[in-house]
Amino acid sequence: MTAVESPALPYRGQSPAEVLEVFREAISGEAGIVLDAAYLDVPFFSGLGLDPLSTVEILDTVREKTGLEFPTSIFRDCATLSDIAKRLSCSTKPNGSAASSSVSLPKEKRPVQFAFADVRKSIGQFSQEAGNANFWSDVYPSQKRLVLAYVTEAFARLGLPLHNLPPGTTVSYPEGISPKHHRVLDGAVFEILQDGGLLERLGDKFIRTKTPVDQTPSQSIFQQLVQDHPLHANTHRLLNVTGSQLADCLTGAADPIKLLFSQNKDLLQDFYTMAPGSLAASKHLAALTRRVFSPSVQGGETIEILEVGAGLGGTTKFILDALLDAGVPFRYTFTDISSSFFGAARKRYRHLPPGLVEYQVLDIEKTPPEQLRDRFHAVVSTNCIHATKDFVASCTNVRRLLRPGGFFALVEFTSRLYWL
Image (tube, rainbow, N blue to C red; front, side):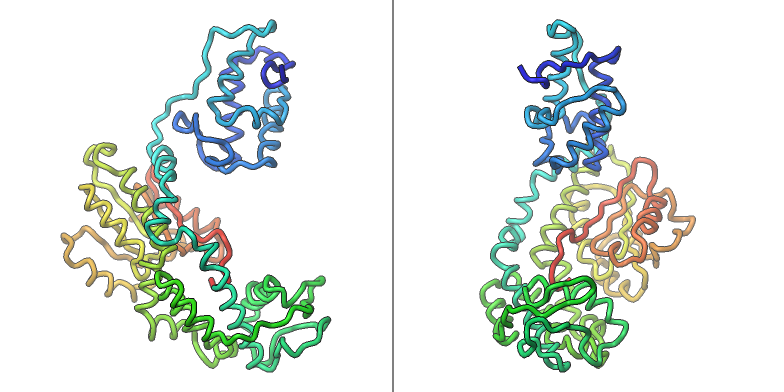
């Protein structure tokens, strides 16, 4: 019998339920989710995202708070919090006999957490429906190759042809780069070249390696990508808008904002709305919204939702459609840092009843106005918060918008894509 099955240490006057509560709080802290009764049978690793290092932290916390030392193998033998509850309840007497009391979690009503756990099971389905299921294996390798070609061609145009540099050469900024873009090179471009094997980092310097430069023209790679992956075609067309003019964008001869928002707004709109990655995320968010605010849960209460950085409205459409389809009474506040987006949004939603969608300028980096505070059942934001200067300050301001029991649904890329 292992130490897990019959802990050598006594409970020192603590009930199994008290010890389990310490486990629950420690696991909640590591998982970033409040674990209530809905999470009893959610697997620690595949469901809550724990890893071996986090389990060590959990056991350290349990030891500090209870004085009890459990072996790390408890997370091998117990896959869920329910398993730990059973293990604790059958080892409560010194002689190892089963305890008469049972261990359970408080059955708090947490509709958001329950809904999130439920909808999370369908992530694979959303990705499949959106055509994004095999993105990392089938599309991304060629996409990386395309971006690397854009970068090496831009460097060559700016007088720094990497294919001609001997191994061991220190590589710095190409001539003519606008100082405001040095951060882009430091934070992205040099990392792309390093990941592509063309540079290696030694201290604060980047050194040319022996890896040869693939000199296939970027436009050839681009055309092949469009042909091979039609669902991602407009995403790659959007990438080509600035990628093909990267040298001019870096020197200031071309303005990437104007290229994207003035001349190619339709491609940008399509990216935020119908690109497979965006579509999968929107389906997920819409399903969560519908699940939380269904009339059977809310009892007919009018739901207030605010969107931060709504922009071109790629996310908005899916949430509105989900709420309307479910028959949820709601008011939606469409916000952005600039009112320039509101005209197009008003046209798009002019068929909706007056007052259903409100439009308001909101800078989430500043304290929100009084009339918006403590008002909303939910705040949603897609690919916006990362662009603010202080994530903590921005999220604190989001919290000020929420009424008690409200939640913040945040959609952001968590894996680095070369071109974002």
